[in-house]
Image 1 (cartoon, rainbow, N blue to C red):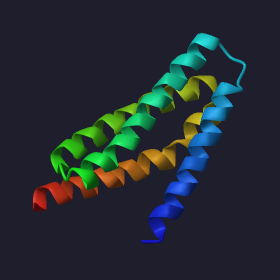
Image 2 (tube, rainbow, N blue to C red; image 1 turned 180 degrees about the vertical axis):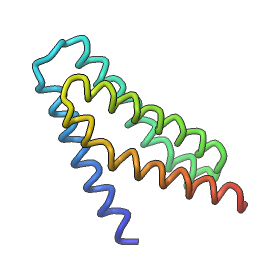
Image 3 (cartoon, helix red, strand yellow; image 1 turned 90 degrees about the horizontal axis):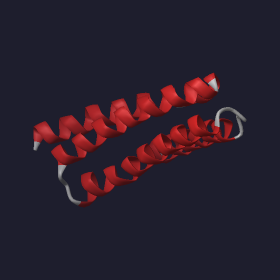
Image 4 (cartoon, rainbow, N blue to C red; image 1 turned 90 degrees about the vertical axis):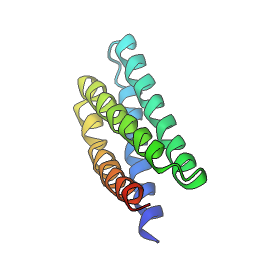
Length: 112
């Protein structure tokens, strides 16, 4: 149980660093805005998932939210990478963790 808070702390630190690098990049303001909007969308989906999974116990719906989050992370990574390659790379552990979470979520759905 102690692993999850530790992993999420590291992931949020990496996400924060990535978003800061994009914000402070000094690159095309329109591209920065689009990248940060994508970041905000995936953060919202990240917030939504535990409410649906743990709160409502709607496992299939939670899995769909995770697929949306997965796509949101990919879009964010691509947009971040265009502005700062390192920023996009910093989101890779987050992407992998969400992939693992989707696997677990699907397993819970199939077993219930």
